[in-house]
Amino acid sequence: MGTDQDLAPAAIAAAIENYRPQVVSEYWAVAGGDFARAAVMKAKPATTADAYRLMYNVAPFVMWARAQDLPENVEAVFTPDRLDEYLSTGDRREWVSNTHVVARWAITRVGRAATRRAPWKLRVAAPKDEKLSAPYSPEQMDWFREVAQTQATTRRSRYMRAALVLHHGAGLKHNELRFVDESDFEQRDGFFVVRVTEKHTVKSRMPNRAVAVDSAYTEWLRELLDQARGETLAHAASGSATYDPLKVIRREIEVPAALPSFDPRRLRNTWLADMLNRRVPLRAVLAAAGLQTLDLPLLLPALRDDDERLSLSAMADISLEMGSDESSVSGVGGM
Image 1 (cartoon, rainbow, N blue to C red):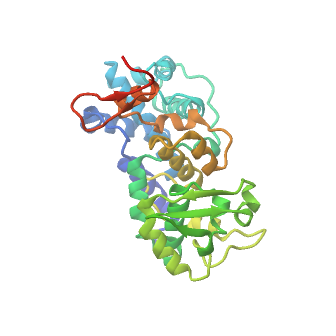
Image 2: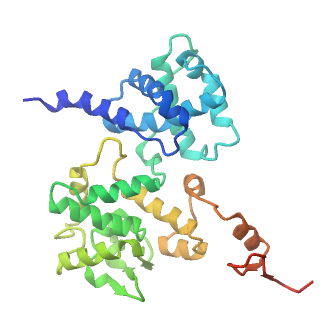
């Protein structure tokens, strides 16, 4: 019978092989994917999470190198100069704050391992996990929802669905979820509102607040409320001052190697990005999150502006009457 150590290399190789970039170019499918995977393997990732982190950062770098007409050769692509150029190029909006640090670390590590002639200097220290709390992509969220329904035990599935409903659907913090029960919800016209009070914030030390739960999770929330029957929503009990049962369950969750770890902080940040993309007023977002300010550099890569016409009219303080072939506008004064 094989051991965990026997399975580790295969799991790491599978994580690298199965990795799917958020944005895929034609080059990635033809040759870029194999080029990136071979380079990352040279770095000898220690775990599947380590492998994912390297692929996440190396994949866009490799596609960028191709766009610069660089030869498909590690000695030409993985150099300190190319890395500096990549991180400073103007069309990479995500190179801010934490993600900049992580990208430099990952590409430097792979470059040091995969090249012989490139003048890499001292190693770059690995970033701390708390710096890796960027929002998940829509594709990753879809996959998490699928995985939540196929967990090996009812206990894991219950926790994972509750976490998606209240971390991603309402922006609650991880140490608030454990205290939520059916008495904390009220139903409005077609949606639920969760009221966060001192009962929930004893650990988070956040202000009291009321948050509407994303209607996409309404069916799951109804099922969880029925399942709880007087218990807390995510588990049979909330634990004690020194014991958080949800942390234990979270470590038991099984996700495919190609997915990042299931992190309540990232779920909450994904919710924040979703609220901003839905054009919820900033004051309302801050109040629902229990915050005074936002880490915009962290959220910026996930923010969209898909309707330039609507954005420009809002800047001009002009309301558009949608559905007309010609713009019908109203503003201050008339011409």
